[in-house]
Image (tube, rainbow, N blue to C red):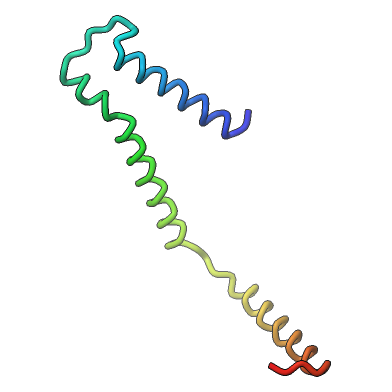
Length: 92
């Protein structure tokens, strides 16, 4: 099963549970305080997922490691290419 299928199954299960609880399809008599929390629950979950994603991206950017050896190698290749092109008559 792919990761997308896992996420879709999870969302389908959560969504059907939410619909069943909010419409009263299960025959449960939830207290009014639970019903008031249950209605905006998808919006809360969406905002929470967005905050988690933003935090994860921020953390990954903050802890990104530079590859100094690769940067030096790339700079030397650029210099070689410029020298080769200059030898062939291209001006920069």
